Length: 481
Image (cartoon, rainbow, N blue to C red; front, top):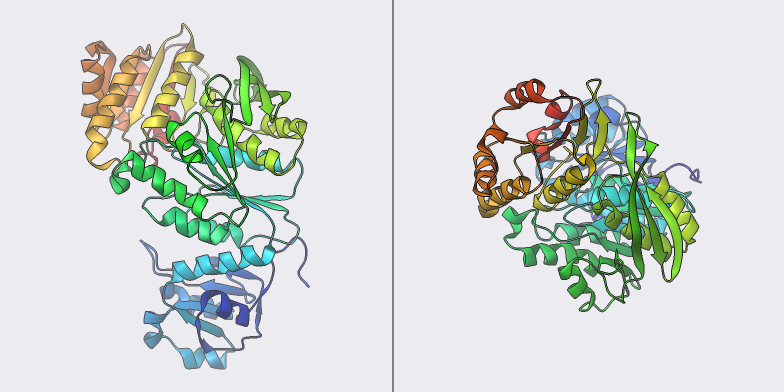
C-alpha cells in the first residue's frame, strides 16, 4: 500500500492501459513508484519516459539509464528498430512503445489525476496566472493539503509532472495552464480535468500565434470545455470579453471584480482599497494593499503584501476558488495575507544607495507592462521614476505598433527617464517621442549600456522599474542597479 505522502505506485499494466502503449519486453506486473523524464534522476523503481524535446532527445540517454539500474522505459515507436530490446529483456527491463512521448506523459498524468479522484482548480489567463495560482495555493492551504504547480510547470510537460506528484494525502490540486497556440489549453484541461476553471483576463499576449483578441479568448475558453461534469467557471467580471463569455456558457459561473465596476452578478468583490507600507519583503517594507473583501454578501478586512491594484484582481480570483471549496471568508483572507510576490514579479528592493528597484522581469506583454507602469507611477509619488523596457515577444505582426503604444504609455506615466533595449527599442522610443516625451529623457542600448547610464544618473530616492519578456533576461539589469 502506498504511503499517504508518496505518489501512488504504478504497475506495468497500468502504464500500458494509461498510454495504450505496445509492450516491448518485461513483466506487466512490475511496479514503479515514480515517473521521470530526467535521466539523471532515475532509480531502479522509476519509469523513465523518453521525451523528444527541442534541444535534447532523451532516447540518447537510454543506455546510461539502464546502466544506472532503471528497470522501466517508455520510448517512442519510431526509435524501436535501433534499441537493444533483447538485452533489456535479459536484464528484466519493462519497456513499452508509444507514438509520442509528450502525449504519453500527459496520458499518464491524466490517468493519475482520475485515479486520485479529488478536486482540481486550474488557472489560465493572459496576465496574472502565476501570481493567481500562488495566491490560490496560499488560500487553499488554509484548509486543505494542497498540491500546486511549481515554478513555470504549466505546459504539456510541466503540468503532467505536477500531477504525477499527487499523493493520497493531497486534498486539492491548484495548477496553472499556459499556452502558445490554439488547442494547448484544451489538451491541458483534458489532462487536469479541473473542477474549477479560472480565467484571470484576456489581453494581447501570444498574438503572433493567435492573430486576434477574439482568438485569444477562444483559446483561453478551451479550459471551460474541459471542466469535469458539474465544474464551475471563475471569470473576471471587469474584463469585457470574459463578462460576455459568462453570459454565453452553460456551466455554473462565479464572477469576481472591483465593487462599482463589475455589476450585480459578481459574487466576489473588493472595495475600500488603500495602500500602506507594512510587510517586510526581506529588503524593505513592501507596499501593502488593504481592502474589504466581499464574498457572497459577507465582508472581511484583507491585506495583500503586493503593490499594484491589478494584484487585487488576482486575489479576488483566488478568493473565489476558496469560496467554492467551502472555506470561510476569514480563512480566505488569512491565505491572501500569507502571500508573498513570486520572484521576478513586482519584487521591490532598496539598494544601499537608496534606489528603489521594482523587479518585474519574469515576463511581459502589453497588459502587464501598462499595469506595471501604473504601479510605478503610484508608488514613487513625487520622486523620480525610470522605466527600463525590454522587448515583448510573441506579438507577431502587431509587435511594432504595440511597442509604440508602450512608448506612448511610458510618456504618459510621469517618468524622468525611459530606457529601451532589444530589437524593438526604436519603436518604444518613437512612441514616447510622438507622445511628447523629452528627447533628452529617452535612451536605447544594450544591457551594459543601460546599466552604465543608470549608474551615472540615479540618486537616492529614485525609483526604477525593469520589465521585459523572459528571453530578454532583464534581471541582468535589475540585479546590477
